[in-house]
Length: 134
Picture 1 (cartoon, helix red, strand yellow):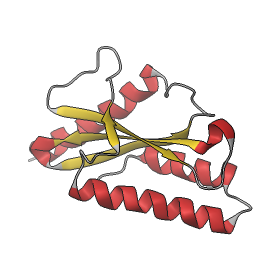
Picture 2 (cartoon, one colour; picture 1 turned 120 degrees about the vertical axis):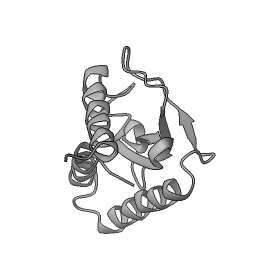
Picture 3 (tube, one colour; picture 1 turned 60 degrees about the horizontal axis):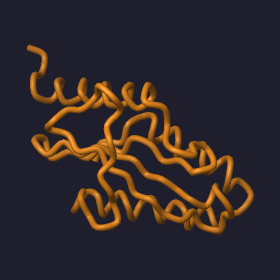
Picture 4 (cartoon, helix red, strand yellow; picture 1 turned 90 degrees about the horizontal axis):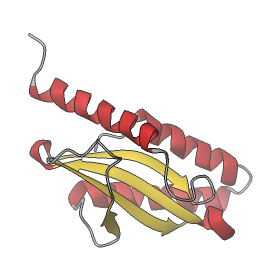
């Protein structure tokens, strides 16, 4: 598991905006995210995840872009519909959590440009692993 900085930042923002005053719900949300991370470490293609389209022009054949749709604990309306995006790189046996957000924040998903930036970070990390500096 190699969470991207954007993933960590989006997680902090969700907690601040939706769970600042409700410790019980915040704890439930944090346990849910930890459960997903633990599950992805064992089985990145588990049944609760779906294949996601790459942003236009960003497709890489050795990557799998996926999304988990889930209910946010104790929230209502569009903010209750949570999304967890991640990328699997099978050659390096790595899972990259990319973004966690609600349907309220992004009715469809983050912009293609924002997603391309995150995919570029993943590619740089893989290059660094495969070709370490001399």
